[in-house]
Amino acid sequence: MLFGHGDDFYNSQNEIKMNFSSNVWHGVNLEKLQEHLNEQFEKLTRYPEPDAASLKRLIARRNEIGDEHIVVTNGSVTAFYLIAQAWKEAKSTIIIPSFSEYEDACRLHGHEIQFCPSTEDLSDISLEGQDFCWICNPNNPDGTLWHRSELLKWIDANKQTTFVVDLAYAGFTTEDMLKPSDVNAHPNMILVLSISKAYNIPGLRIGYLVSTAEKAAEIGKYVIPWSVNAAAIEASKYILIHPAQFTLPIRKWQRETADFIYQLSKLDGLEVLPTNTTFFLVRLKKGSASELKDFLLNNYGILIRDASNFRGLDESYIRLSTQSAVENDALVDAIKEWLK
Image 1 (cartoon, rainbow, N blue to C red):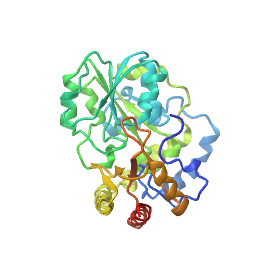
Image 2 (cartoon, rainbow, N blue to C red):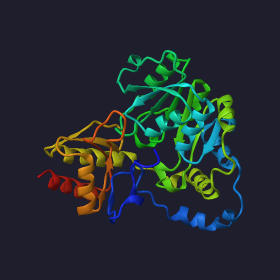
Image 3 (cartoon, rainbow, N blue to C red):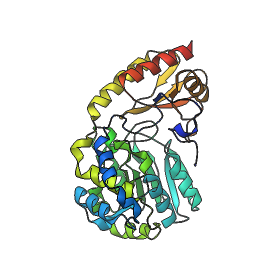
């Protein structure tokens, strides 16, 4: 899906004053990172490392795994396409609703796809004969998740299937999530992680995958040299070396999310779906997502995510990501106006 994602800021003819469509952490202070990148500017005059080797080594040390288990990619989306390409024409199950790029990557590389609606009891999902299972945990777009213990139990019960687990939003919850070191004991996993979402630098396109050394080597055959640019490498290294500067205040953000959901839930005409993270789905009982999106954008400069193009959802769904208290209140008031 080249177009149709959230945060289509670039596509708007209106001034965007508030952006609820993007799931990235909005409150990070990037001043010191900007200073660092300015100091490293001369590195843009040279080719970067072909495989982001120095960043790979740093990620490995931070996660107590060997760097042979890691492939650094131009954003986590690139990782999905590389995986699908490395095992062309495989049989894949995708748990829905979820991120559309799993399906797009699989279709591009000839996978035979089956879709399974998400369920609380993972044992209800049959993976017989399936080479891959693609899941997002916590899940985009609804913010729900499976706990680490139950997910590992399911993965171990289906050793014939390789699980591609998108952990882009693992930092957006206080629950216990899978960790890169888990691949050591669970070889039928490929974990995909994002460096950009928790640090509000999605424009740099930086992510990585973790798997067994054998799987990483197979995927690495399809990595394009210099596909990760020098600015992304330097920014990521700076963030990993200075974690205290980039601590995501997740408990505070979750409290703000709970209050935001409470205010929205008081409005007739909306159903707010449960979430374990800082973003969530809202079902409109009147009108459509596109109509509400246009109203908010044209009248208030507010951008929301029309979630109707997620497989398994329809035109009544929007996705919101909690912003500041002032912005949250402004959106509640604007939707209240639309519902009149």
